[in-house]
Length: 460
Image (cartoon, rainbow, N blue to C red; front, side, top):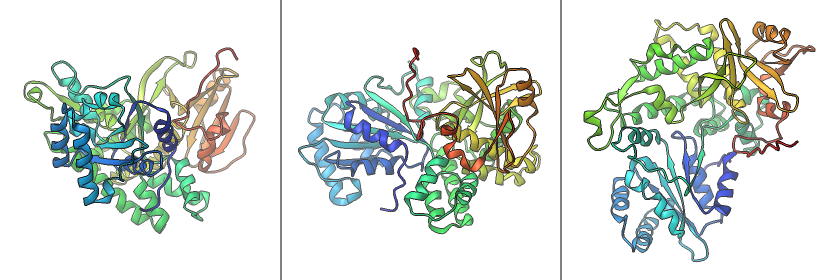
C-alpha cells in the first residue's frame, strides 16, 4: 500500500475496537480516507482478520440481502468470505479462532435491508461490525419521506457514531513530518490554504510538490461528486449548478448574510426515494441540505447579541474541505453575472480556513448585527470574558471588535492574519500559518482534537 496518513480519528477507531461492545457507523464524504483507515485497523493485529464488503457491488449486495434471517448465515458468511479472499487478497485476511473478525460494510446506504439488520448482527457478538456511508443523507431523506418516517432504522444504543472529513491543517502538518517531508511551515500552509486535505491531493503534493498536479486531482474529485449525485436524484445536476451553489456559500461567508435563498429554487431537485414514496409526494429537497447531509458543508452558529451569547439566531455555512472551496472559486470567471469580487477570494478562503481550524476544538460562533460583524467569538470559561477572533488575509482594521471592546462586551481581540505586525495591549496579532496550534494558544489542552472528550468539572 502507499503511505498511510494516520488521522486523529484512528486512535478513536482503536479505542472502539478494543473496548466497545457496540457496532460503529463511520460517516463522511467520499475519498476522505474512511475505507483506508478501516483497512489499516483490520491489519492492526486487534482482529483475527477483516472482511471488506462494498454494497455498491450488485453481487455482494444481492447475497447480503438474501442471507438475512437465515440462522446459518455465519457459516454461509465464512464460505462467502473465503470465496473472495481466494479471488483478491484485498478483500480481507484469514479467519483465526482466537479473535473476532472485523466486518466493514462500505456504502451502507445502498442496502436498506442491510442497514436495518445492523442491530441484529451487533447483538450476536460473533464479530465486530463497522458500517460506512458517503451518502447517508439519502437514508435520512428516505426516513423523512417514508410512510412511517422509518425507511431506514437507526439502531440507537447498539451502534456508536463517528464522523470523518478531509484532513485538517494540523493533520497535514503532522503528515508532512510522518512522511519525512522537508517542506517549511510556510510551504505547507500555502499548499493547504488552496488545495486542502483530501488524502489523495495531500499525497500528490507530498510526492510532486506540483500545484498543477494537485489541481488536477481536485478537479477529478469534484467530478466524482457531481457524477455520483446522479445516483440519488431524478433530475440532472450539472457542474454549473454545483459551482453556483458553492460560490453562494462563499458569498455568505464574506457577507455574513443569508443570501442562499436567492439560489434555492435553482438548487432544488427530486431525490430518488424507494417504494411508491417518490411518485406521490412533493419530495423536493434543497441541494444545500443534501450537501450538509453528505458532510460536504457544515455549519457554525451566529449570534446577534453580545450580552446573550447563548441566543443562536442562525447558522453560517462552511466548506468541509478547503480545496473544494478553492476549486469552486477558481470557476468564478465562468459566471460573470454572480456578484463576487475576485479581490475578496483570499479573504473568503482565510475565514473558511480559520473556521476549519477552530472546528478542531470548538463550535465556531460569529456575531452579526446590522453593520457590525465579528468573525468568531471565544469565551474564556475561567475568566468568563469574551475574546473576538478576527481574520485578515493580509492586514486590516477590526472596527466592530474595537467598538465592542470599548463598550465592555469584548475583553480582547485576536487578529489572525498573514502579515505579522506588533500586538498591542488590547489586540494580539497571531500568524495564520500557526493555526495548527491555535487551540493550545487559547488554553485548550495540547493535542486537543474534535474527537477528544472534554469533561467539565462544574465544582472547580
